[in-house]
Length: 317
Image (cartoon, rainbow, N blue to C red; front, side, top):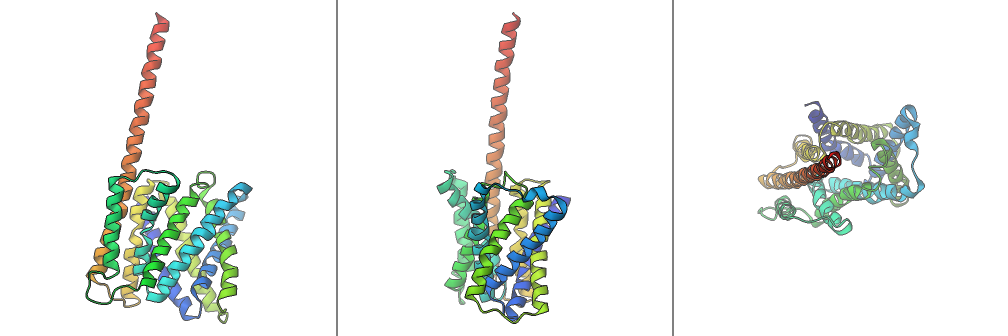
């Protein structure tokens, strides 16, 4: 029960990020500047934590740095920019957060191409359900104005960028502690986003309030949810945790309705249900695959044990 609470809390904290983004946008901060602030402050917080708790976790092999470049710039910077830009264009994170959760489909497709993972009937069904959800979200079935192509592409770009974290992370997540991976990911993300923001977007007038909102964004919607999610993962499998974390778009929708007075239609609800159902289907398929693999491993071990027993009996005779 405790681990479930941690995962749900992480999803809720991720879901309120539009509050901080919109406040920063109102103060003149553009999307890439918000990315730079989030990544830089998060990297500094994690660096202080590692220096105070365990400096050994800062050690990594040079050959692994390109993978951190992938998780940092290829994933975090790209996904955050698309996500924040979509929030800026819509004024809320309900639809962008929902489109962000198409990431498992991108992970499935990229894993099939890069790692030769099999695409099963269940995975194809999940893709079809996700596509149906996108049709609902974009307003294809409604009479009113649908979602703009720019917001749709940005939302899907956020989903793709988020998926790339899993792809690049495959190469380092088993080698290093979670804090190590996250710190170097955000350190590379900051190293990439800060210069881009400085060169491409005019800097707003520095204000203490702006820095405080940026600090709150990094602390409450980045560092703390990561820590809670990691803590919750230690007591449950990743599939169940991913399903529970899907509370994020529901929280984002609630923030949109209550804080930003965004209209919430039956079509958005239908799209939300479809995409969450696809996530559940993909994770249940993965769990069944793990259980089947475990049974096969036990069977092989048992057969090996029988063979060993028969050899022992023959030796005794």
